[in-house]
Amino acid sequence: MYLADADDSRIDTGLLGVRAASAEKRDLAAQWAGQLGARLLTGRPDDHGVALIADQPAGLELITTQGRPKPVTVDFTAAQILRRLKGIAVRRDPLVKAIGLHRRRDLTVVDATAGLGRDGLVLAWLGAEVRWIESSPTLALMLNQAIELARDSALGGQERLREAVDRLKLLFGQAECILPSLSQADVVYLDPMYPLSSMRGGVGKEAQTLQALIGKPSPSDEELLIRRALSCAKQRVAVKRPLRASPLAGHRPIRHIAGKSIRFDIYE
Ligand SMILES: C[S@@+](CC[C@H](N)C(=O)[O-])C[C@H]1O[C@@H](n2cnc3c(N)ncnc32)[C@H](O)[C@@H]1O
Image 1 (cartoon, rainbow, N blue to C red):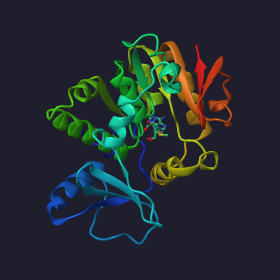
Image 2 (cartoon, protein in one colour; image 1 turned 180 degrees about the vertical axis):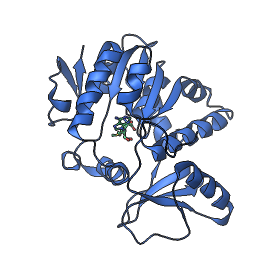
Image 3 (tube, helix red, strand yellow; image 1 turned 90 degrees about the vertical axis):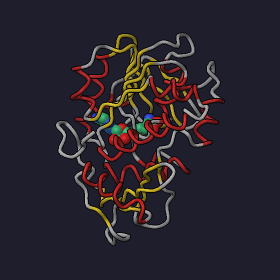
Image 4 (cartoon, helix red, strand yellow; image 1 turned 30 degrees about the vertical axis):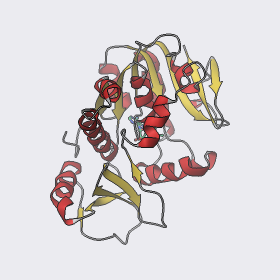
């Protein structure tokens, strides 16, 4: 996947470059920097922003250069992710109910804001055919690496993880541009970035890194995104929002499913 200057893609304005964590990773770091059209960094950059580090075992991790925040990785084989997958309460999980997978497992879903891939992986794990769309070149690269790593490690016994990963297809670009060219899906799922002030704790830290990398979409992006999502969905659109945030682009949902700190707005 070549990610620099692709049509319809955004540039990750906060990305300072790619750095190798060790001498053995230098070639990989150079390859990834080339794919992203980014600088190859040799030390810790002085500027404020986000650096992508070529490291083991997850392949790539994102770090902000200010303070000492937690690195952000995409690793579907991580113990924490596998625990979440194996512990899903299908009848009660708000994401699962918002998509409708508690009633039917063989749904087709477009997860149009893939991000770190966690929600989409849950849906594929339960049996949905998922098309991921991601507009950040850096995150698309990280997702691609995570898929390859999960396929390799699945050879070591995680058969169900391999099956889930085989149900995921990654598309790189702006969802509002890609959605009209896709065949309709049962469900379109949106989880765009939202204001940091509406989030707390660990999630907020990861979100800070993502926002430093990408920035927040303008209201017109959100309006077009939800309109195109509604046209692409056969059954429903589900939108993740902070519990008390206004609906996406002011579109009133027909109902919502509330979690502890977030809710899913449903449009049918
Ligand atoms: C909050 S994150 C999604 C997190 C994701 N649900 C997960 O489970 O990891 C939002 C992501 O959507 C992406 N995004 C935002 N607007 C987009 C658009 N119009 N098209 C494609 N991706 C978009 C951002 O680059 C970011 O990675």
